[in-house]
Image (cartoon, rainbow, N blue to C red):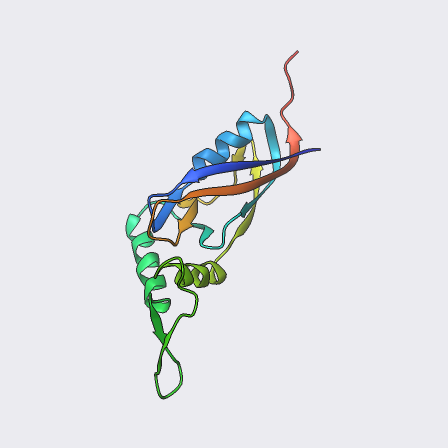
Length: 155
């Protein structure tokens, strides 16, 4: 068994999803791993990692709209009978900043995935996504830790 630590960089175009499955599989292959575990950690507090459907783009659109409905921008309504509007106290980096932190807390910042034959084990309609919660273009770094068996070298 061997292991490596590294980072992968992704540039987002603002709020939404980036399918990173191919980049992850390429990383596994480029580092000559055959089978093992891939641990991913987002090094940011305003984006997430998730596994979801890759066949119908409406799934991702609906996820985004749902998350926006439960974590609104600017302020939210109290769940008490008064339904008081409560404004976020953390807003220094923009109206999307505090909602992005909440969305990240409600989702995942790390994933552990098994792989075999140099490919992540996923269901037929699944992909791994980086989910950007901020409005603007961002550079995102994902820590990658692989523990596994290397490919046998042909002599």
